[in-house]
Length: 382
Ligand code: MG
Image: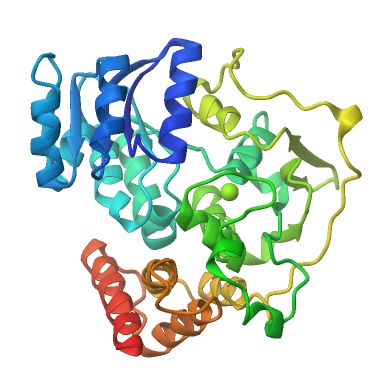
């Protein structure tokens, strides 16, 4: 099945790999969006000839308009440009590869048009999962996860006729670059070390989240929302080799797993072609050259971000939006060398203590909680 894509966040790691999949598998590209990387946007636009390119930054958009003046490509700007790309009639599938809660409104816009969502923006489900899933059901929009763990679970659930037969979802975690380190050792790690993931090449925000294990916490909440599972039926296990991407245990005790090389092209492609499978660019896995597969217990005390996320998963309401907003702000400060590695969980915890939790929140409550959480983080470092 050939799809026509709108790729939100085409200059990022997932966006670029989506274009690689599109090129190999013959999917059309109707729209791409970037924040401000006009050089890459120009190259992508010339190669894939989309109808529309949206650039969030106004100045950068003006620059791109000049660069693409000799083409038919329409250039839009600002958050409205993003929404236009998400709702573009020509696209049947929207790949949400924007980082952070900034992906929430465009995802809802695509859902309202009944498009298939290839969901690569976990923060959307962490902040507003119940709202987003309910809206998708109402509008008949399919949500197919791109995150490797959730894609693995999605694949293991194919053929499962009754979700009541699922006993547990088991999410694997690589453990990141600092697995096994003590709090004392973590207090000394530098940004450069945190940016080196042992198994995956990814964008900077998710790489830091993988080092703090916040990524696994966010994925735990993402799994709860995607699969309507209570927290007690989801387990995180550390699997250093990143070969088993996640598992599902059924009521009879059978456990199904999905294995593959650490290559995001496969989950991206499956989100586009599901329920079909086609040849694609993903690197095949050679079982005979795999290291032994190991599974260990995570340590949410040392990796406090994971502990905090698990607490928010229980609490629900706006707490997950506060967790996410505070984390986004703290990670940005860490990347600017303004705070230390262990300040990330410290500031997230302080924000969770400060911002009150609302139950059954609407979209505005969620966005307010996100803002309050960021503000709490900025205030504690001022
Ligand atoms: Mg993942």
